[in-house]
Length: 169
Image 1: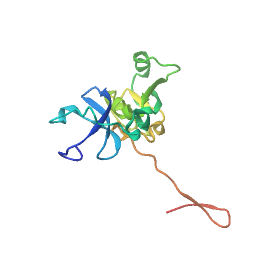
Image 2: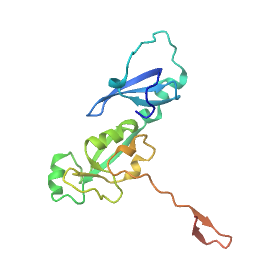
Image 3: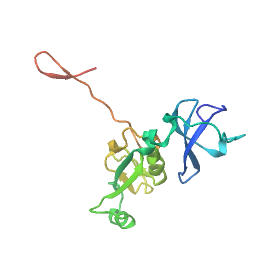
């Protein structure tokens, strides 16, 4: 969608169902990195059976696919009946722990309507769960599609010669 109609060579890694549509996780030879493609948007597909696979195109080189992150989901602090939410998920001490590939985290959180905002500000009963630590998504390539996700803000601190710390502009 972002690049318009282009001709690509991809090296497929996996098929992923994000709950809404299928994606092909693949190495994109044009952009030289792993990404997701939607098969229904592909036309004139041709299998290149004799095309060698380069070292950088192998599955073990896809950091987002190889990286497993642990997400701790809790009943949304604004939910009127958190005890019901706890009954709906296999929670231990009020926490539902899910392990997911970094490449798929945003899809899963979106599908489950998990409020990923740091201050749990999303409103509505559809947000039964809240991501307890939004920093657990740091570095995940599709975190931006998770409901309420905000990239972490970095505060720079300068040390003056007298040892005092000041916030850098």
